[in-house]
Length: 120
Image (cartoon, rainbow, N blue to C red; front, side):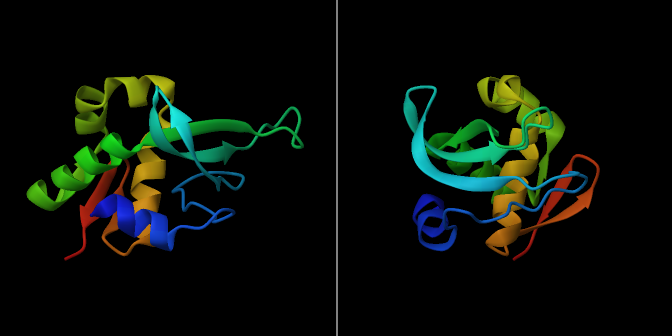
């Protein structure tokens, strides 16, 4: 359900809201990450702006995060680090990317450092 909503709503080039980013993080599209279908996004490369880095969040990771958000009413960095260690290991910006995508879908809002709240 959440994956279909992401695929229908979030288009390539969409800027992902980030609470304290100094440059834009943008959606590249769908691809593979950790051997699974994933939303791939660009991360600014301050040394070479013409060659941004890429990271991704798998469909399963989005689904797990969505279930947690709707069940508990929030998405926290502590939960993220414990529950999705492979995603967290790839970079802390994956947490704010999940939260930012959920913000774009109007199902979450950034509450405080490390916390997104569910919007019913």
